[in-house]
Image 1 (tube, helix red, strand yellow):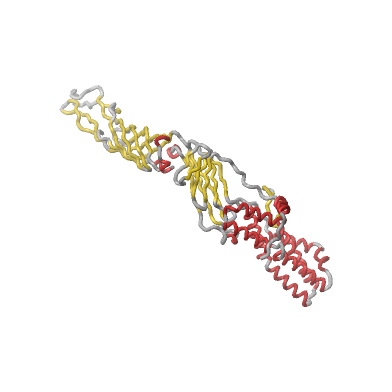
Image 2 (cartoon, one colour):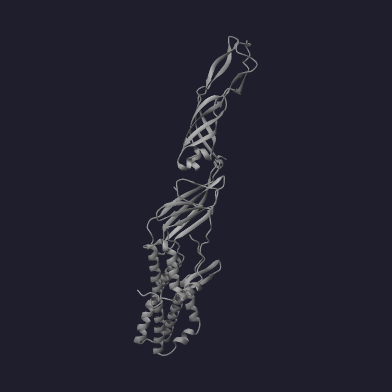
Length: 463
């Protein structure tokens, strides 16, 4: 395969500057950076002078802005996508394609060019004459098309150069920027930057428009020959060859479009991608989800792209000093017995007992940064742990205590206050009339009662 001629450094620099490359991604300095190596799968937290390996399964707690830096990739061969979604951190909430502008269709542009040539006198002026002149016109137009497709500085050379560069990127992902700069210098004047109304200019191959014009001239030459009626052997042979080129026009322009896409992808190649910054607030964290997938379009990239895909998530959580948790479980109250009063032989007496020992209860608890080891996979101490059992026969049971949790399981102990029958204005043994009832009130007892708790920590579902 023939390659583009070597240019001097000065010419390469001039060509690179004249091509006006698209702006690089603005680098943002973040106080905290998560550096993820997609090639090795390792994650490192960079904070000031600190650098330590982290487990993506555990949250990163910080009150500062966080960036995600992805290395060990080549954007020419892989798609790197990023999602940032909010995460409820307090439980209060639960309690209450690469964008690209439209590119003109090259086949449509070629059709317009051919129509304009037919509408003007350029074709007849160029190709009017005897059979020899007609043959020479067709031959010139055919030779120009063939030279643009496979001659020096042709589409074939450009495609070969960009595929070699992409192959080198596949061999060394970290060298993507360097190889992209070398490719830009090598292509040099073959690049042209076309203005776009919605942003920076778009780099295109100068040869793509030249191929369109050459096909239009070839079509015009054939139209002139057809109109002249000349059919000698030389003209017929040249016409048949030119028609073969025109029949392959669609395939040729598809190759032009794909080559332009490959060039654009290769010139924009980077070996690292930065996302962010994002920040966690006191009530909301952030889930940072990263996808790295091999490129399959254009089709020529499929054999070069690294195999396999990466899907990893990082959770950024605020460094709250106070953290909220809630759960649902059972309370066991060993002394959950209260008296029931009535009349016996005309006097006030205790006629029975109300047993409330096992209750369904909801809990709401607080923990603090010094006693919460969940981020490292450890337990958590909760204090105070407020409990309420709303379905007791005598009325809601309320209380509080301390609890210890590990993942979704929580065990605790404390005291509760229960509603009990209290005699109102009478005492046990006082006489009561036959038609009278014992006057009682339902009040919370002044004596707290011990409880034991076993609960399911629902707040872990949102971590």
